[in-house]
Image: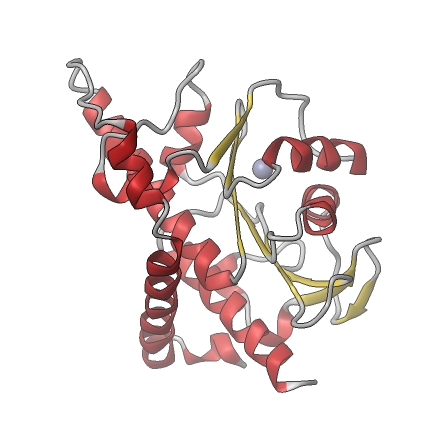
Amino acid sequence: MTSSLRQARVDLAATLRWAARLGYQQGVCNHFSLLAPHSDELFLVNPEGFFWSEITASSLLLCDLDGTIVEGTGTVELSAFSLHAPIHRLNKHAKAVLHTHSPYATALCLIRNARVEPVFLPGFQFFGKIAYDEDCHGAAFSIEEGEREAAILADKNVLMMRNHGPLVVGPTVAAAFDRLYYLEDTCQRQMLAMSAGRPLQWVADEVAASLASQVPVFDAYAEKHLTAIKRVLDREEPDYSR
Ligand SMILES: [Zn+2]
């Protein structure tokens, strides 16, 4: 195994372990996937039937975009393959694709016409970067459904699927995970604010847009975020990198 693929496995396993701690997984559902380094054809994904808290670097499956497992033992859930593979194939900026049913971002997806509003400073990064699929077709059990979602996502960073939950993409697993973390956190704080029954205080579009344009700043921060996560995991659950 090349060292870059080995590092990709460790990084993806770390984000799954951390997302488990944060309570983002529902049962043994939901998937994080990452294109293998220097490949547009192969991606890593967590195997079917495991808690994210159990995932190790070596237990991640390496698959091609037709769903054939080329490295590792186990199975890939049909909806994982149907949703993730078309997005990797059609959205070239989506090196990492993270889908959860995390509580607050999902709750926002369950409210008619709800949007991530420009009201909370760290959430301004999402201004103009979120696509909304308002037309739930049920679970993604076909490539056609995954292709429909990929077309709606287009060049955005986040897809909020109404009646379902969020999907976040990024150029690295660090960037995608940092976006997922701040999306869930922003939705939590916005939902708390909405529950006060008072109007939300928006900022001007220019203010939110100016922060959203600072992509290199967020990507650099994201690398530090993942480094800190791995530092804690190395100390507290070092088997993740096995
Ligand atoms: Zn789902």
